[in-house]
Image 1 (tube, rainbow, N blue to C red):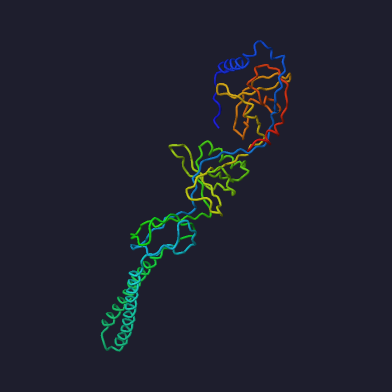
Image 2: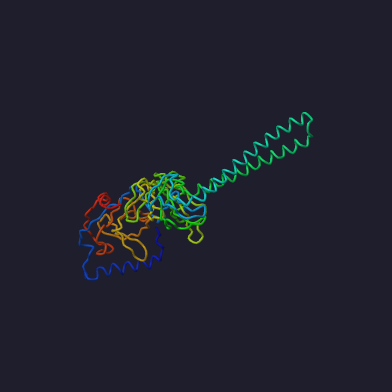
Length: 381
């Protein structure tokens, strides 16, 4: 939280005097130092406290991809619906395939023909070798036979490559889910002509999700140091507050952070991962990541007991003679409806819990003690 700026002691003392004088102006000349006023007070205590800070987050699927056509054609069938859960390898679109089937059949025939020619060339090479060994024909005939055999084998490789390419094109007419996930919007309908690269839908793997959020450089340094010193009792565990204010039932964990600060904001992005077994969290949903920080022996003062003058926080401290004195203090952070005190107050001191607006310096009161534990128990965390 923003620490309170220091101002001139004279300025806020004069302002405080004017305020408390105004509060008692209607009381005339009554001497409040001799008239006891019954007011609730509480005694300051220290308590091990868990603070939390919320950060706006962008929720993203762990895997989210666009499904695009890999060949030209038209949509013959759509085998899924928007929002449907599919398994890895499941066919979700079928493009027209008759032309691709014909191309594959032709490529297969060419491959068979090339294989047959290669076999014939191999037989011919063997026959020529025998004749050369018997000196029936010259050695140059064998060299020619070897060359023809080699060329025939090259044609087999070429035909095999063409066959594989045709088989791939045919396979591309069946568009399958690359992983298990949820089908998103389908913008095209059956019969739509598509070109290579056209978007058919997108697919989100929602078994778990990433929550990206940004923290300031100061908060980043505090987090890193706490982790290094072993002060983070939750070991990186975080909560997710959903858009309706409810708490997501599964805890997440901070896994990583970016390597640079954003030059325009001075912040750095963190990434937390949350399990999502019910698939309630969707890609690009919003929420707040809640980080926790353990504070040992935090000195607590109720916010209700404090008042501000000239950007400084004050309370009325009850002296041993039951007279009140104003005391300024520096808050370190907020905890629910309490301040965690940085300086200015001490454990065991009593402060006025309610009715500060009726008091002035030196007012005699009749303290009615409210235990701090009861205030803590009645306060939402």
